[in-house]
Image (cartoon, rainbow, N blue to C red; front, side, top):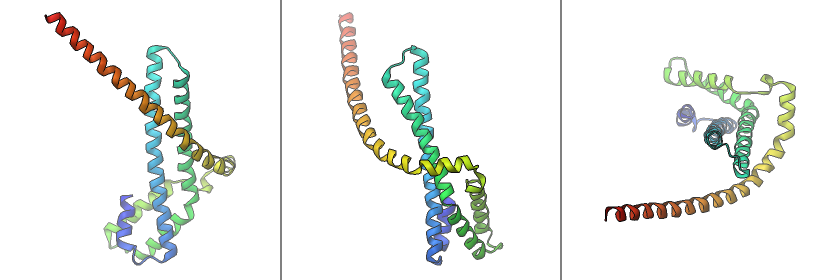
Amino acid sequence: MKLLNIINETFRESMPPDVQQSFNEFYRTSRTYIENQKKIQECYREGMKIDAQLFDTKIVTLELNQKLDWYHSEISRSAFWQNTVQVDTYEDRKKLLQYLSSQISAFDLKLWFVLQELRFHHNQMLNRNKMNKKDIQFMDENYEELKHEILIRRGFMKKLYQKYVTLYSNYEKLNRRLLKNKSNNRKNLLL
């Protein structure tokens, strides 16, 4: 996104409206990709914590199973949105790069290197030409369903978060009570 910010500072005023729209899409692609990657990493870490807990205790509860299932689903969804945004914005990214190629001189080394790095990232991203027919079909068929499911899950997440806050609050109260009792027991032993 740093590269796009440099482009924005330099060209925003001179870009035609259609290229500005393409810039916005390229920026959205980067932001969406990064946000979803963070979700994937967070879900992976939390899932591994639960996995370690299950390995240590050898006890599987319904709640832990549901959490693991949710993390797995969240990773899948995030990966789906990463792929979708790349495919959907391919033409806009290409248009922006063509515009920048026509505006940046090879003698302006800083901007030329920014352009080359943007090209590199663009070429690493997905587009329909890099996908097989089965993947394209899956993406097309599941787009609306996943979009709807995310709206439903947001309500579920609020409930899960509220339950977590309540459990954590109860845990903290219990922990304070135990520490207080432990402290009182030590005082009694010293007397």
